[in-house]
Amino acid sequence: ELGGYEHYMLKEIHEQPEALRNAMRGRLDEENATAVFGGLNLTPQQLRGIERITLTGCGTSWHSALVGEYLIEELARIPVEVQYASELRYRNPPIENNTLVFGITQSGETADTLAALRETKRKGHRTLAICNVVGSSIAQAADGGVYLHAGPEIGVASTKAYTSQCCVLTMLALYFGRMRHMSFERGQEIIEELHRLPGAVQQALSCDLQVRDVAAKYKDATNVLYLGRQFNFPTALEGALKLKEISYIHAEGYPAAEMKHGPIALVDKATPSVFIIPHGTTYDKVMANMEEVRARGGPIIAIASHDDPQVDSVADDVIRIPRVPEFLQPIVSVIPLQLLSYHVALLRGCDVDKPRNLAKSVTVE
Ligand code: F6R
Image (cartoon, rainbow, N blue to C red; front, top):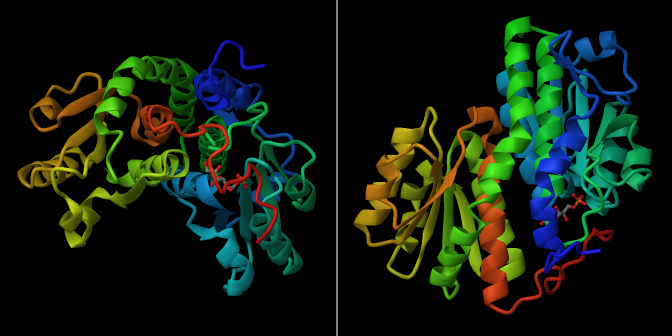
């Protein structure tokens, strides 16, 4: 069952190019430069009338919701709000008419996400699920939805479901964008980039050996900071969560620019910072943050574009990823972070696939 891999988590990390292909199969419509989904159960007129989107979920799925917020607002220009499902269910927020609510979940069984979706549906809002497990409670409770088709995810730490969620959200952003202002040409460009994505993820996976060395260097850390901006801010949160849950090292993710408002006080020789700094609009700003950390003696691991020589002078270790447009960076830049947590956990003798205190689906609130 493990197909030659030592753990399910490692197997599932390496399955990501294929999982992405499966998520996209039959859903990219070149002729109309858009995406197509079979199970939204809403007419084009109803979808055209959507004025706001709420994305909700827990844990890693909440992180993909944050990626979705950046994606949908940038590509489709629809205002998006992200809510923890556990908060949404009791908060009684004023949700406006013509709001579409997405519950995002790998298992489809998370109690808080199910309750949040049921509560919003009860109020008369349209609810959709982005879900991996076919026929699960959340898939059934929603008015419709999109399956990830990522295949079974057995390792407790979510990996391929996360990148598949980000991929589905990208296709939804394309779909909503093309219903509105997005040009045919821009739609075509996005489809071409999506076709190249599994190859880019495959390339990113080749950092494995190098990541193992970096893991050996920092395995005894007690605190690690993860910093990134814009599309890579959720990646910082996700990298930190992955490290926490399977290696039991305390880690925090922040938008890189927030660092100077408090967390920088943590920086010292024993506290490594992981900077997610691929090329992009905020590159220079993140570089300046990185220099701040260096000036305070903090070790730096940089996740950077393959053709960026500038980071070498600032970071202690540079892990290279292929260049993709900013809106696809979350799916590529998370790969080395998944591998980093895996190798650190392994070196610390942790049970990678079954971390303490955690269950694969959280059916209690
Ligand atoms: C982290 C992780 C959890 C889940 C969360 C929601 O790696 O797996 O944080 O993401 O419990 O689970 P689902 O997506 O099944 O609703």
